Length: 112
Image 1 (tube, rainbow, N blue to C red):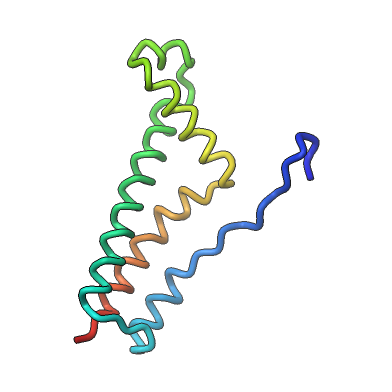
Image 2: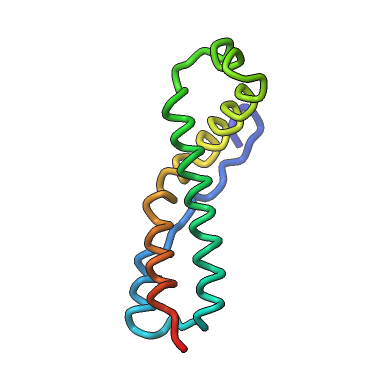
């Protein structure tokens, strides 16, 4: 535990390359409707993470008073996004690279 009493979580492990290989080998196979549901969820997650990381990058050095003036709810959204990025240890940015691999793998895994 660190001095604040927080335990450090294990690093997030991504398996995009593994999923791509399994799909290419025909070992990851899904019904097209099921694959489409998974892909839709992954695309939604990618969209949310892209927005969150972009927000953190845009407003990283902006004082909270300036953010608060933009919109009353903006401060909370920015604080939440920055906190999530810090707590994840950069996993949100890594997920932006990995999620497209998952999407491609599930597109390749569709079998009638």
